[in-house]
Length: 248
Image (cartoon, rainbow, N blue to C red; front, side, top):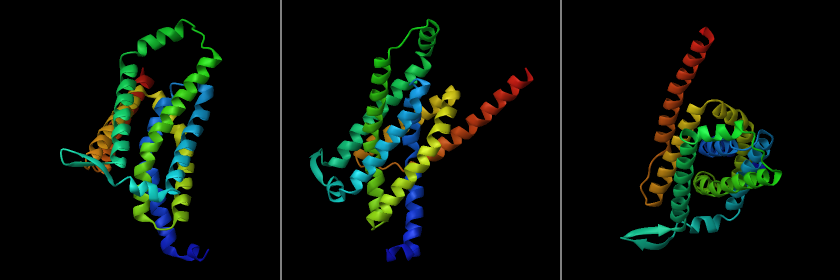
């Protein structure tokens, strides 16, 4: 336990925890949007299960570091481009995220009227259907968690040597995300324009993952900066709309 007295360990823990939280932003957005399609009484459970899967997948990858690092070895090549296990995971995850985000944008923009009509008609959904929807969404969350976890763990390995520090940072970051997921999800659910903006952000993340699979590196800082700017503009629009409604 002497390493706990080393200030460098605590600095590494703080930096890695902050990085894990930043890298988890897209995960929180993905979970919040999917959970928003569930009945209100199931949303908290789905959030906890989704973030629980995120923590378990990260810890599982951390405890199999030798296998994770072997994923960077090329399995085959296409047109002179080496393709590794990591590249395949990123490619499949990126394509899944592109499909899912695009589908959710369609549902939000084009199919919203149909959803409202179904709600007004008083259609009763059985408990079995509700459970099926819940576990279907949790399964989708688990799939994308693995993709997000892979890069997160590889980054952690490059920053810190002690496995204990990595585990502590992962558990702490998931705890922070668990605390932040509900208010973020409720905010996104209250503002449809923010939801579409978040889905567009996930489309960009999916494109970045797909490009990364082919060794085309797109720094996430640019994506986060664009998203932060867009959110800042949208927050001004939300405030302006609220003031107009108050005057009316």
